[in-house]
Length: 366
Image (tube, rainbow, N blue to C red; front, side):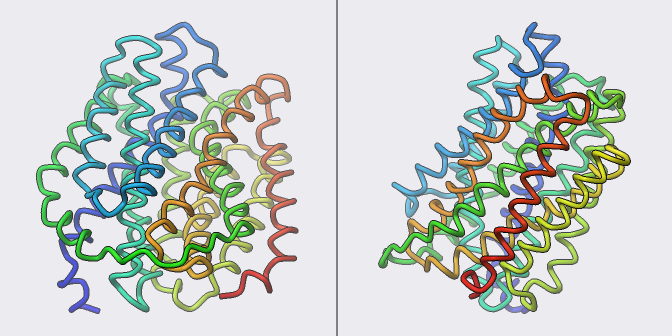
């Protein structure tokens, strides 16, 4: 294992740094939505468009990977994230800010499709564990960013500006990782999409995007102060990170779709806890489930669909369908379903998803 880490040190270092920055950038949207609403004079539902804009950009990035994946390097992804975060920080107007979120999301999507398959492949049988490590580092940035946002006076200019600076710094050192990534590329083979697992991914990633992007607003509607909601989002990501760190040591020992099933079942229990007991406590607890959605889904889909160059972007694109659509549906619903309506919806979706996953365990075995 040490030899593998040394052999792929450039790829791993660039991936870890990029995922830290990705976590920071994505987690800022949730606590910043009330600030954007005030700055631009838009409603909470309209401010939620920023979350969907981010995921639209992700979809565009993944589409680029599908069409031109062999020529994309980490530096392309980091350049897009730098420009996008800088555009959001500029606050040059509502639609310019939306455009910045799209560009940042495009770099996010490129990074996900660049690093995940190459790390999974580079580390052989330890690939699922290293994939968990890579995605766990996302939580490090996601924990820190809301706290930094509050410390900087809840001002999107400073927080997104720092994100842009961090992305630019990683870009400066990402050259060797680009060459390593290119060397890891495999030739195109038969392409066999598996619609079942991609459907499960769409729903799960939609839930994850909604919890991260709309969760703080849902907490505020339930009576939590804005600053406290931002801190609770950091707590969500502490639990998110803890779940992925544990997964580093056990991912190669548990069937990936069983992991997915257990994660959505736990999310259903936590959502019910948020409805009937404490939104704050159980929102934070749902971080563990959210941290396990993607690894269980991605490893299952990779095993089912093979190593064709079009497979990784197709897998990620299926998740982005949910990531784009779910916030657009849930943001308006929050305004008409009561103070805990968001958690009622999450409970209903996760309960239905758990039943479907249990019934599909045998078919999804890899």
